[in-house]
Image (cartoon, rainbow, N blue to C red; front, side, top):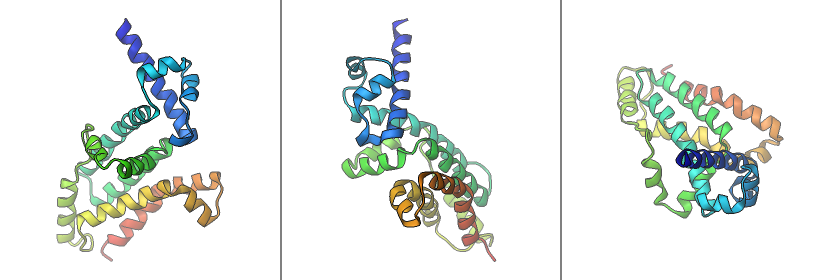
Length: 204
């Protein structure tokens, strides 16, 4: 019973922390606010997570462990490169809209601690692009897509999907949009990104 209660409490804390981090970001969130959201006292929160950084990492790993297998499954299924691009973009953007803290957290952690990448790679289902690379090479040889290195194509997919979230305040200012308009634009990118890339690599 005690073990079940501990697991339930920790899960409750992680859900509460996720809501606070989504609303306030890493810097704006306070441990007391997270404790209040979880309906526990601050001492109990510190018993489970000694610092905000450790709590944030736990929330991140929880979320990334849900996203990572999705992306890996898409990269390694038997669909065409065109469908992989569509499904990757749709799934990634849909997930990040619900977990907007993830991209910036990865960037911040990698800048602060380059070894953090080794932690991410241990997450079950971390994306493997070997099948994707072989498939790109094959579709180039078949004349279905223009000559392009698979690594470059994958970087293009990642960049176009990630950048609007990492640089959201800058993008909002440059295109002069409010939060509601920006959210509409991000939703539209589920199709815009894949259409742009597919049109760029398809043989005319």
